Amino acid sequence: MLDTKLYTLLKVAEYRNYTQAAKSLNLTQPAVSQHIHALENELGVRLFERLGNRLVLTRAGEKAVSAARAISTLYDNLKYEISDSNYGVKELNIGITHTVESNRISEALAKYVSENRNIKIKLITDTQSKLRSMLKNYELDMAIIDGSVSDEALVSKLLDTDRLVLVIDPSHPLAQKDSVTIDEIRHEKMILRLPGSGTGNMFLSAIQYKDINIDEFDIILEVDNIATIKDLVRQRYGVSVLAESACMDEIMKKKLVALPIEQLNMKREINIIYTKGFQYEAFADEIVRTYRELP
Image (cartoon, rainbow, N blue to C red; front, side):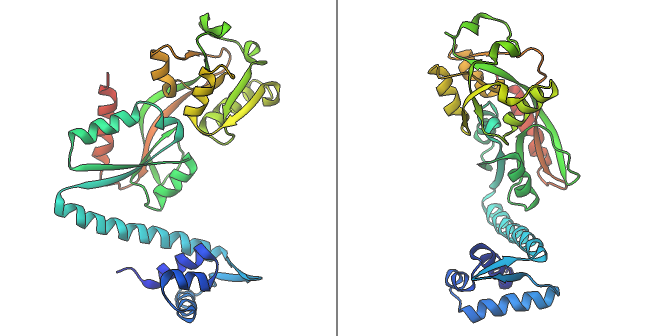
């Protein structure tokens, strides 16, 4: 069983209050205080400082909480491993970025589990930075992301390549062209991903490389949800810059048109990432194979 002091630490860090943490743990407040003081004595550091009526984590406390989360997740994974082994079933937690979620990768995962009944997959969608953090805390087994990572703690396996394109409605005047220039889209009403997203960052980097300011574009709306952006483009509210793979279904059905933007290099990788020592590395290879076999 995991040390109860670690559970107490996580709850106090969550509520920043001994009384609320005690209520959540069904303990008395003195018991919660005793757990924290005992843990501080064992580690030889202060974990919390009091700021008014609120507890604030010290730098050492932040490290302790991060480690406690990882230990807690590993313990939960151990219980799942033992439970799953009794039934011959393995459940994998896989993170996926918003852009990647919209293309054929979800189909490849569904195809794989339908052919391998001893595997269950739980998909968690979030930003690349959050998924990397979850991997390091052992909250995820692996993640599929747009772009590459430079992190010695993680292994990266190339799944596919992709590019960003201008996405427009088929009735748009530019739809008959093979490509567009920056000048041709500079005054178009644009609906883009939120700043900080992989797609948003790549478009911003590409125009900045050409010494173009984002303020030169007529951005009317910034949206996090890719499906919403595609719907708005189809309803002719504006144009967008999205990953081509995220729009492939609509492109094939002629509901959207995708055009490369001349002068901008917006090619990128789609990678599977996991921590070193990942025991299901062969599974990552199988996902790559299944993905590439899709029609």
